[in-house]
Length: 410
Image (cartoon, rainbow, N blue to C red):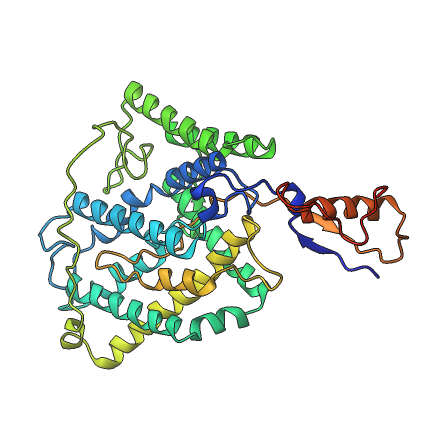
């Protein structure tokens, strides 16, 4: 029985055009520069919410001494947002230039909530002590990568389990989107409920539903830039609705329940001077003075375990979407990807590749079924010989010779 193999047809792969194309293997992966730019814009707009959400999670929780992240007695959202954006940008560039893999990195929503509510809020713990534990976890996982242990575990895990992890991450991200949109809320007697008191009402819900339906329609119809068009349309619609109706945001005390869930869309300018004073504010061993060594080990192990498998699922999901996995379900340059992912123990929040998306479009795929029983005079063989002869012929400066099996009539 013939075995079907999936590979890229060299005859249909366009030649690299320029140094940028050759370095990032854009044409080799079946994509174009324009497609990569659209994918990058979609990735940015799909991940930009973390610049707002990360400060709302780690910036509103006081530590064990009553101080907020940054050392003050009140939240400093601007400082946290600046550090979050800087770390995400630097590590995304590192993933592209060092690992040459289409992953965008930003703050992980799983670990930042754990650090905020389970570590920093412990008695006498400070935010610097909590971030020190994050740095320790990052250094440990980096050592595991450099020694080859993490890569060995990655390749030993079955493809089905890697896929299941990526599905779980996708469901988690989808749930975050539904909650942020106000489509689902905490239920009365149930974990979740639709809208407010079980009903969907309010202009924010209308904007969300329009954006979701537009995304599905454009995606099904295979419109180029479908996600980008839907995101920009929903964003513009939200700004127009807010400026026209002045709905406002929901308040922590429960008032204005039909308002925007996180913050009201507004346009307050384009450029502002960022404050990066939060970078470097961590105490590597300060937690050992506040809690026992056993507790420190357990907390670090918990962060390590979540980070270990979270990255695994994301790499497989993104690589599979971009058709960059081998037959065993492993992405190319696995160790380089893991090194970049592991070398990110940020003092603000883990810049983990949980919120990621492939910017490369799937490469062209041809399915070939070997047929050794075909006679040499069949059209399939003659076509293959012609391509082989053309590719093998030297330049016009030298005497053009044909291979022994290339005849004038083939």
